[in-house]
Image (cartoon, helix red, strand yellow):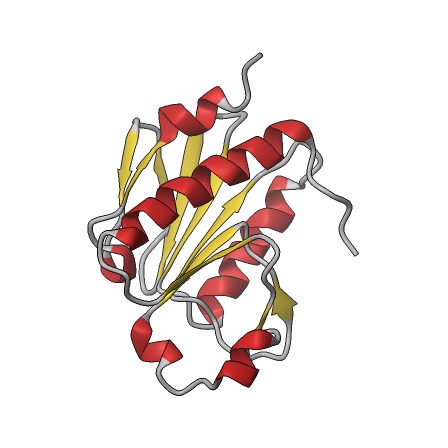
Length: 155
């Protein structure tokens, strides 16, 4: 069991989910999930990202019963937000696990270093340090305003 998020992390998670949900509302396809949602992955592990998007194609075969429980699928896109207590190396391993289980795109946001580690199927990890991080693949058209995320860590 994981302890609850601290204040800065909770605010950061809220901002990330707000922006992802805003993008989703433009097309209303698939589903957006927050950090309270766990997923049983193909390797039998269960992980819970800070934010996730699942495409309509993945949802098409699921019943209401299957979605009311912990879904047995890997989201197409996930975001993990580092908290002050997270081990950076453990977080990177978790990102590798998301990709190995089928996530097409995964972002590890480091608010303390003001950078994002971008993991994609079939590509080397890249690091983004700008303001507007533009999505691709399953989240084409989504743009995350990182300045709004960084503000969650200021007093």
